[in-house]
Every structure is written in structure tokens, then in C-alpha cells.
Length: 134
Image 1: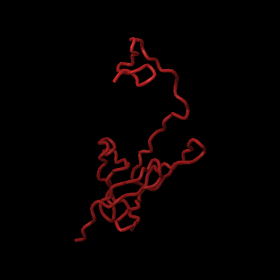
Image 2: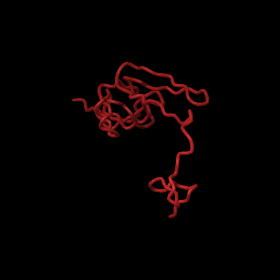
Image 3: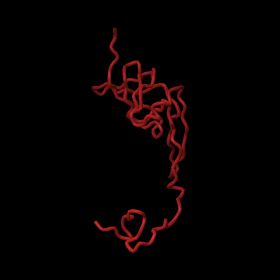
Image 4: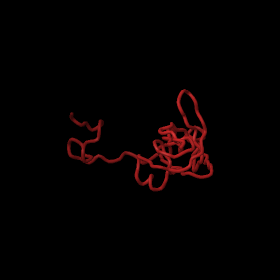
């Protein structure tokens, strides 16, 4: 597949003639990123962030409860007892940061987080393994 000057950037950032492809402009405000929330276990703390268009996103800084889908259309709110792991990144796992896909221990059992806490401002999850009462 040939690379064209106005199409995909050639490997090495060069035009077909060998000239260097230069960045045509700098970043715009709308393209700027923001710092991640790094949600942890603790007393519920939210941060409001204004987004483009005047809306608001909720950043969950810390939380201690999760809405758990236990099956059959039933959802229960459970207290988080501890952090198990975050398979997305070992550094986040060491720090106990809760993101989508993280595993936490609750009163109901082991729960996998399905919401994006830094975007949605709450913790939702599905029950992976129930607590076995002895």
C-alpha cells in the first residue's frame, strides 16, 4: 500500500520525495487532556470538572460503596472491604487505584468494576465470586 503526502504519515515521518513532514499546527484547547482521577478506596469524594459545551463530569476521587449487579436484574449496594487487583496495570494495582476492570472485595463477594469512576463519578460492578458463609 503506497503512502501519499496527504494520506497516512509515512514511516520515519518522510514524504515520498524524502522531505520531512512537519507538524502543521500546535494543540488546541479542545484537544488538551486532563489529569486522571486515580480513584481509591475511602470516604466518598467527588470533583466536578467542566467539559466542552458547559456540561459537568464527576470525577470520583475516592469511594467506599459499589452498586453490584447480582443477576436476574437485581442490584445491591455493598461496602467495599478491600482492593484485590487491577489487571489493566500493575502500577495501578500496587497503588490500589480503582478503574474499570479492577477487582474489589465487598460484603457480597468479589466484584469486578464495570463503570469508569473518573468519568461517571460512581462505582458499578458485577459479582464475580460470592462469599461462602461458613
